[in-house]
Length: 106
Image 1 (cartoon, rainbow, N blue to C red):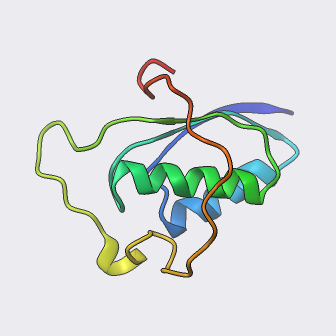
Image 2 (tube, rainbow, N blue to C red; image 1 turned 45 degrees about the vertical axis):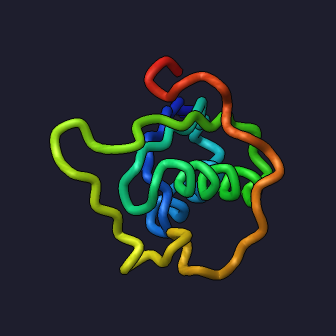
């Protein structure tokens, strides 16, 4: 059974592992990835999602979304996940870019 997913994430190390599991599962079709601020800011989270898609050699659009929560102050978890959200291992920047469309509209 093939299932289609739209994955909404804040793409730090825990979500990168989940993305890899979904992208490599032959029974899952990831239609799109949307990224919001959370563990890291939305720009870093988007870079991490793009990097993960490339690592998996997948063709999945990535859309950036909200830069902060709607109802509370934004607090990241870089103290846990590292400044880049992936343990500060200095992975190369992704070659592809996020889609122009806002994640909400995607």
